[in-house]
Image 1 (tube, helix red, strand yellow):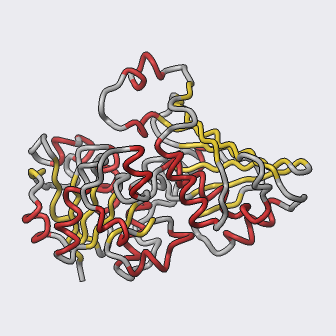
Image 2 (cartoon, rainbow, N blue to C red):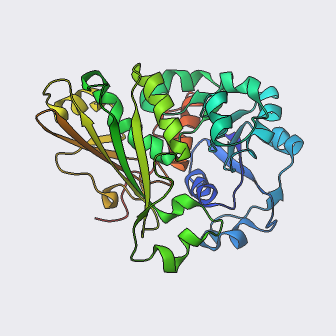
Length: 336
């Protein structure tokens, strides 16, 4: 049986990746796509889809979306997504929200973003990191899809929380391809700025810092402070996170990772440092860890548009409908 599926916010990079994933999905049938502007054929909006799919891009209308959809992916900016959630949720539509609108507590959300317009549904949203919330995702109708930086950071850090000296600050050095900045024009993402360049932005007080710290406490069951510094690198896609931490006692880092992720098909424990090229175009997260006495180094890599957004959204949707989690997820890297 096919499940009627829609994307709201199809004009962006994550919207395009969702289309690519859904075109060949055996159960989710993409039958409607919406955008705030550029109402034309989908293949005219994204030229790479020419002769692949014919679907009109419609203006988003809540009533129409609810009538046409059993599953909706909201690939919208923060604040815009919550305008649709309540109406869809009340009509029994399952929702995967790729924005930040339901990832944080009310206090932290309003501290970092804006006034929340749908406070009552914050308690209904499940944070969609499958390796740690798989059973909860399977029971919910509203998934808050994690951000790319938090996904790579949390998967790296969480296995080691029982062994960390919590009196020491944990440091996260994260580097992302420029597609993570979205399509909106900005001086920092212009070619002449990003090409042959590398720079930090919003150090320490980046919005994802609150998301990472809240989930470290919630999923890791410890009050751990992580200092987060993101960087832009001259790549289209991909993300590399390096974590520096202090241990309570010496450990076998790779054994801990292997024990935790041995049965997780989309987390690969590496014996050498993880690399962006090995995960670009896939749903995998590659993790490596090494110690020197009480010093711990962890590195993880993901595709920021896939595991950090669209393919993770698809994995969550699979779970919500009782399907095999891996259904339709990309597993072959772009580079050898």
